[in-house]
Amino acid sequence: MGAMFKINRTEDSRLTSWYFEIDRRLLGCVLLMVVLSVVFALSAGSVAAERIGQPWHFFLVKAIPFYIMGMTILFGASFLNKKQVLLLAAANLAFGLALLPLTVIAPHIINNSARFVSFGFFNVMPSDIMKPGFIIMTAYFLSRMKDRYGTNIFSNKDAWRFDTWLSWVYYLALFGLVVFIIFNHPDFGTAILYLLVFGAMIFIAGMPLILIPVFGLIGAGMLTVAFFTLGHVQRRLIAFFTGTGDTYQVDNSVDAIRHGGLLPRADDAFVKQYLPDVHTDFIFAAIAEDLGAILSCGLLVLLFYVLRRLIVNATKARDLFVLYATGGTAALFGFQICFNMITTLNLFAPKGMTLPFISYGGSSLLAYCLLFGMVLALVREDKWK
Image (cartoon, rainbow, N blue to C red; front, side, top):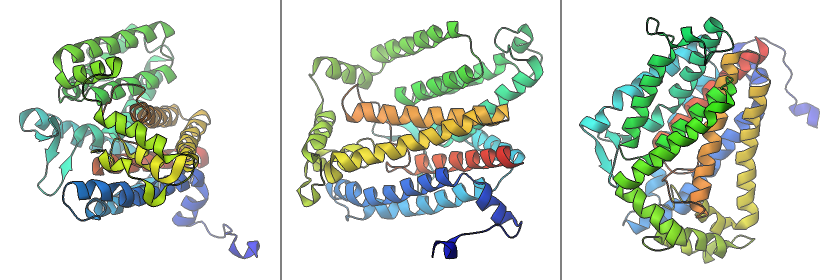
């Protein structure tokens, strides 16, 4: 019977080539995460909707167009070649950079954060939308730097010249401006995320180990500035280290996980009802209470298997550009999971970071679908062409 369903490569059309060349394991995991996201949007989203006086399906209905667009983007991008991926990434980055100043000039404020731009019928978070372009174009920049200046791109004086666009000077100036704007939204968590992903990518590119403490000092400096200038960061840090102040969300998050036990609670799951951000930042707490520790740990296994697939693809890459792009994607995916989990488990002060693919959020879903679609295309071409 198994032979009846075996697919043989009998023709060389573009579709069959795509099917046999794509990383089907990684693609399958992404599709599974999206399906799980729909399920959790029904569960956690219904609680959040009823809290604000909306029908139980309110957030699911709002998310459906983004799921459709996300799947279209994911599959469409996975068919592209390297040149087309670069053009799409450049357009994505340009779009994000064009919107980013609007968060300073005319921001759309949600929950006291000026990180959004409103288009009337939906809101866009530029710092989320531009993540794919940032990673792909940074990977291209690093690979071109290696091509022109050799392996030693960090101490080579020619790599720091002002008379060529392919220079650390212009890249770091633009990167620093982007991080500064994001930091002042205020969005300390995303600013640190960008810094960590950039650090991981240049580490893969051969950054001298002596520069690692420099990133630590930059991060510590940003945390110090945030503590004394951003009231919400100060309150969250004080609450975390002293246990006083507003610990409502993290307390209920931990209580929901504890209440979940080992096996699913079904209708007995009620702690999640007290979490305002149960469908976004604290969705794993709702999942743990609904499904229990065993199945929720299964979700973590899925997430880390995706991370492993990205790392494996990066280590097998023949093209430096593909190595940096896939490695940067692994860094973004991994760091964001860690940020979300340490907040959910109250291992550090809350940073407002969603769980990739799983949490409710249109900008985040579209960005990750685009990024993974482009990475799937790059890995496919690098492996088979």
